[in-house]
Image (cartoon, rainbow, N blue to C red; front, top):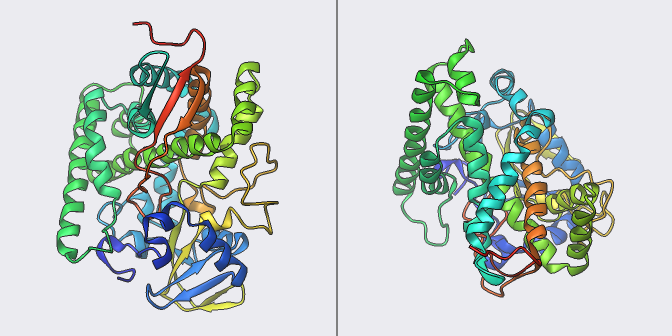
Length: 412
């Protein structure tokens, strides 16, 4: 299946298509990166780009490497910011950008902390025990946050999970034999998201509040109802999938490094924010929640001395770039003190993730709340399954065993 396959997806390389290869792709990245900055894959009919410099070039140059020819084919993202390129992308993004600036998202810190406390209170039963960190914490928290920013009710937040998971899924290429059925299923999921968002828009037109949908629906932004629907639908989906994996990956990284975990717990106890900032940035580098971005060359061009022809797809491996030894010392070691840390986890150029500041805030707050509550936390040895979307890096479930910190047991 090439770039023109179901939903516009490009399949993962064969070494990363297995469960183990998907969960731990780093040996393959290291081998490929040491051999070449980029390579042409005749099976997938695309370029794979591995080094920091080359990935940054592809992502930064939206004029030469376009997003729309790939994402515009996908039923989920068609006619959204992800499927547009400048200048139309710039115009649409400017309508919501101020709501996701560093300064703007700080107002949600208390709400995020309250949500984190509530979710952990529900998940942790007694002084010790176990729970699935993804379903009980990492997934519902960012859903609640982005839905609250948009102005959605609690009922809408609950109904969003199933449809959004299906909307970002890719076909199982090991068993995939019915392209029409996949496209039909994905379109049904997208329709479900549209119904939820439409309910919110109609409600806010009748009873506006202090939220993003009320602002867009009640102002003269020149958006049609369809455009508003697509914009808010994208924000609902994209506003949680990255953060879910960031939270899960943070726990995976810290649980594997007891020294880093103790340092983080010490910083939390001292009220020292800087080590928490550095830890989240290192998780973003070490296990980037978004592992790739796909572009298409709009003209004949060159990257790292290799000629790329107009119309050829290019897969920029963010995950590989973030472990490039030319930029990061000892890149395969998780270093919670790393500084500077110029990771490109949220991309570069005009398509830099709109919600980057919000995701980082959620990562910092959840880290603090979780490790204030526990004396110890370990990932239960189990067979993890990777998330279904090929552009994401994370696990579907993350069972953990905990011991509550003194005085933090649930006494209800």
